[in-house]
Amino acid sequence: MLLFSILIGTILNVFVPFEQTNEFINPTWISVIYLVIAIGCFVLYSYLYRFSTRLKQVLKMKDNNLLNQSFKFQKSYWKFTGILTIVFVGAYVVIGIVALIISMAKMY
Image 1 (cartoon, one colour):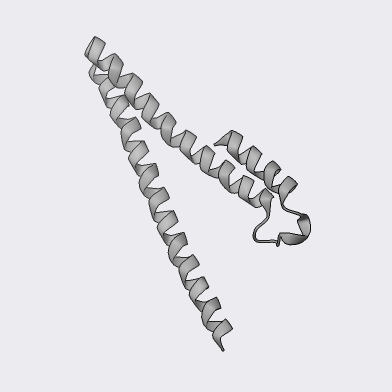
Image 2: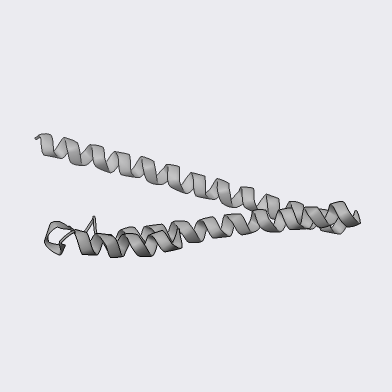
């Protein structure tokens, strides 16, 4: 995703002339959005990786402290996933309402 975020901005800047872009559909903004998504994915996957490595150690050593640590990472993963879900659903609702208002304003 990091590579794609860099490439999409470069490719769109080369193939889409600056006169055809507007301030809302700017290739730089698309790159920034993909970069933010990549960072969010990295954080989520790092929680899952830490959970799985600790759990693998628990199976070998049968240590309850490591088991508690591994489940804390899984709990953090699900908290972060839930927060991101709420944020994106809220953003979709706001975008839908704004789009509806703009479309209604253009009708009259």
